[in-house]
Image (spheres, rainbow, N blue to C red):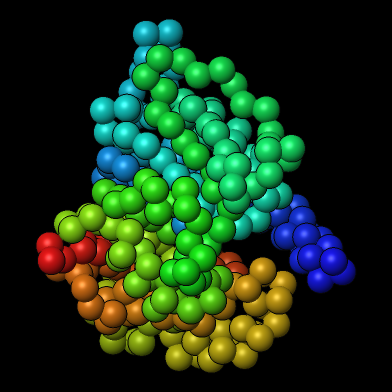
Amino acid sequence: MIKNTLWSVYDWMFSTMWIIESTRNDDKVDIYRKMIWPEISGNVLELGPGFAASLKFLAHETTNDGSFYVDPNVIKSYTALEPNPFMYGRLQGNAEANGFNVSYDRLSYPSDKVHNTVSPKPNMVPFKIVRGTLDDAADIPKAVLAQAPYDSILTSFSLCTVRDPETALRNIQSLLKPGGTFYFIEHVRQPDPKDMTVVEDNGVDAVFWGKVQDWITPIWKIIGHGCHVNRRSGLTVARIGGWKVVDYKSVRPAIDLQSRIMPLSFGKAVKADN
């Protein structure tokens, strides 16, 4: 009981901090996210969407009443797998603002805690909020499994917080249909100085700042709700196998101190056909 209460307080504290920090983060990374997010299509699963501000970069259309909503000809359904329930109010609000018909998975999230949802309109794309993670194949929520296989699975700054990145990626692969695509944008440990995926260097000293990331990770992961700033997520995606195509780029932003400890890798991996 005490442990659950403390964890709930921890979730609330991070979600409160994220109200401010997510805006700062999006201002820095949206230029890269919008390079790949418009390609997302079909039956979609997002792991750790937070407030899901990135929904605005999905394919949209202008409806008869002048609303600018997600295009139902491109996005057929959307499952948001988010472990922190204190994110749900803003997550739901962003989904509804983009024209989704929001519902909650009652098995993973009790009905008495569900936020009020708007009345659906014709052709609104279904959007289900599910509480959980992909940390363990045995604990994947039934609502996520029921909607599989997925055409597109995506993560934005989620692989840094999962218990084990390789396990999460294996579970992502198992939920993708053959030929389905995993889209990601993740902050990573500074890529090596001669890393060929780096397309934006900005004169950042990769060796020095990589060491800084290693030094601060034990403290940062407490402050950042499990965030490991020194994971090599792009390399991990490429090395686990099971893909027929892996295409990602890395950048070393130099906007401020925080950007130097949070370089980015972003791109996509296409699951093999068999």
